[in-house]
Image (cartoon, rainbow, N blue to C red; front, side, top):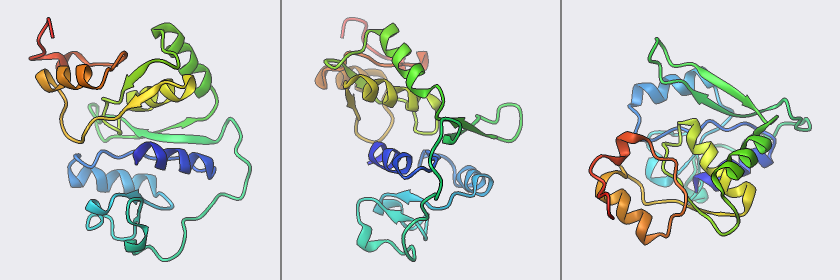
Length: 186
């Protein structure tokens, strides 16, 4: 649902702000207050947290009055594609606006460097709030590869290894901390 929602927002000419629902409530509230999005798309299970949200899996249950606004200008390479917030390690997290310009070239270059093609299976491992998740998605979509989206929840150690094997993952951007407990021969 997340990838479809992101693509729909892009197609409508707007920028998306991916938010990890596992983040603390105060961090999510600060991100929304800072970004002031025109609308929120989420799942029905999170409807109580976002009262005016459009529910992507249950639109009839949405309480948002009317459709989300659609920008009335043509999208150019300099228009915002998405917003990612910094970790806040040096203070308050800040929203970083990433324009469309260069995203295709970056995704294609990374895919070429990693040998990703239309037969590849790329794991969606990063939190949606990290720019690595955008790269995982773009590398798969730019090459026609399969984007492997695991079940929600933490994915590390033996579960990570099992998921990679069971789902036939050929490519994954894995931070070292996620490798803890992974069987070397598995």
